[in-house]
Length: 229
Image 1: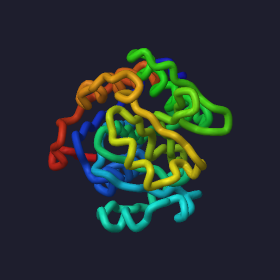
Image 2 (image 1 turned 180 degrees about the vertical axis):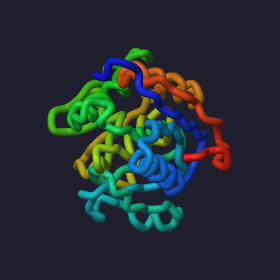
Image 3 (image 1 turned 135 degrees about the vertical axis):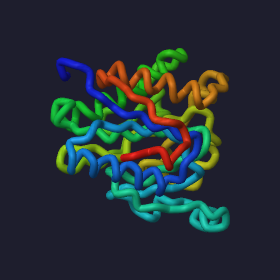
Image 4 (image 1 turned 90 degrees about the vertical axis):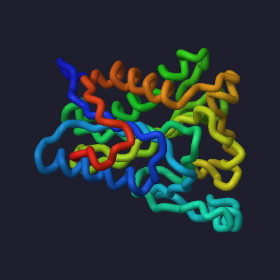
């Protein structure tokens, strides 16, 4: 780990379309490439969307008719992994980090992303952990936290998603992560706690700060025109 805290800008959005948030991530990444700019962390919710990783197979969308009828976007994300879903009630975090500042170790970076979610969940009495060969965060055999990243020139993009209080039945439209009979769960399902998303964002940010040793500068909420990436 670094000897001193790493400066990181934090952007929070109550709801932002997936494609718009991806554009912001790529702009933040380019600022690091061009100018050595600071790390950025986006904490967001998305309207319902299905995203396809680089190894995704279209047959892992199990109900394409319903997807079309409900007008759910299906986006090639360019991240690692297979198919996943983002939806209201799921907290998504995108760390655009220069990994030269974080040890230049991809496996450790993924471990820390999982650790951030595990520490978050432990505060609510949820004993979450890892499964060998299956990225993400698990509660017994059910998946609650997802990891899907892309790294180029040691700069990360994409990130993690954590089910807080989302409609889990929506996952029936896909084969999450391409895993047969994968069951998903959420904080609300496990604890009956209805956690406000603002509080969830604040707590997850604290876990990022602790695990990655960040010194954060918060940017104005929901004001795209004020963001100067």
